[in-house]
Image (cartoon, rainbow over all chains, first blue to last red; front, top):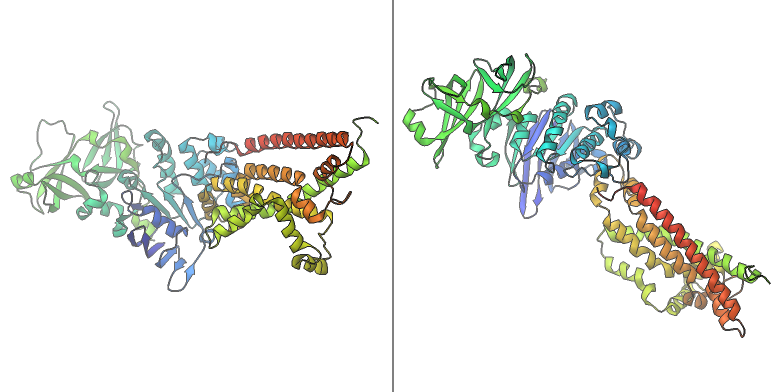
Length: 370
Length: 235
């Protein structure tokens, strides 16, 4: 659905990006200065790449070998900018309908539906200057959705917001990603947002795209430590809510061969959930320990161990078809005699799975390729 | 004679002045907006030269500007004879010539504030407009132009005031013909050159002051309404 293979200049640095995604939410992930905004501006048509090819939903918008270079206004790519860029002299309503009255686009989405989806009902008559940062971003998203886009680019829509505002807007993004029914390119340097929202992950590092693929698979790749950030490394586990323990305030999540206990009410019984478990929050034991405060303990098989030159080792464990990532010391690997294929007990503190890292599971990759 | 009753000659000068200044503004303002936008948004070869040319009437003695206009737009001038032969438009010793002189002299005063206000409009807003399907010109009309309106209004007022009071270039280019090119400023000059013209000069001064004052009040009201419409300048 989105296919990019371009090269160009990024200041002094070379930018070489090549990836494909089948649809749903594709995250472009990288540290500040990796070239994320330059790359999105190239896809949107605001910056011209030196050479290469970009196609969106089967339409070639740029191809240097055939001299194709559609101007921004003809690409039909909705762009949500980091700084919202609402038109300050127009009301929220006129901003939302700008594509219709100035861009002569015929929105395929109903105005009322978009307003409802993003909770903009009470803001329509206001001017952008009177809105909070989170409200502005919601208006900017609505404005882009109503421009009849083939692709929606969201360039770090949460970067300029404080944590409280982010928490306000994230549920809207969750709904948008599931309900929008159009491919989204989500740019972020937060692994948390990426894990929560995306289906495909593209890693951008120093202007290069070393790897891309389904998000759960990418997060368990231990060779990408530098790009994904060592402390935030972790894996995604999907499951369904099997029960709710009201007395102790816990939620029971069935992940196949094990049931995890996580704090707080995440949803209702039967809801699909996606948990991000950081590698550094996972401990391993040769047998289930006794007399321990850790509530999550289950059996898993070690699928690989990658030792680095430093004191750490990254271990991937397989639990009923899903992959968990554990980060322990090399010394422990040696002491316990761990090796690939060995059965171990996995220990995860319930409180380490904190509230922000949960989200409804998205459409699975398999469904999207249909 | 009642002091507050305007005499026919005074009426004539007042109406002519308003006509000359309005026509000058009507023709010069759109060009000033275009030039200001180009200077603010684009870096092109000759940017500095265009900028210098625009400001030339501001630094040249008005008589020089008037004389250059006479050479170029006079009956025998290259542009003047061309316009006369093809369109039948004549500037020499005509009120249209007074309007041309006023427009040229007012031009740099209009370009400057308009350019500054275009520079204050974030060009990224036009990128956003284009991403929503607006063409370049539509983006200009719907985003940059309305956001620059306060500066355009300021430039228009300065230009109108300059056009109303223009003297040197006008008298050099189109002379001082009653009912044709004798604007308030020229009438005032004529009165001061006439023995016992003191009262006439004083009355013309009052008229000029009244018109200027009324224009300022009107523009202030307009500016206030504009500010309310645009809301906060914050993007």
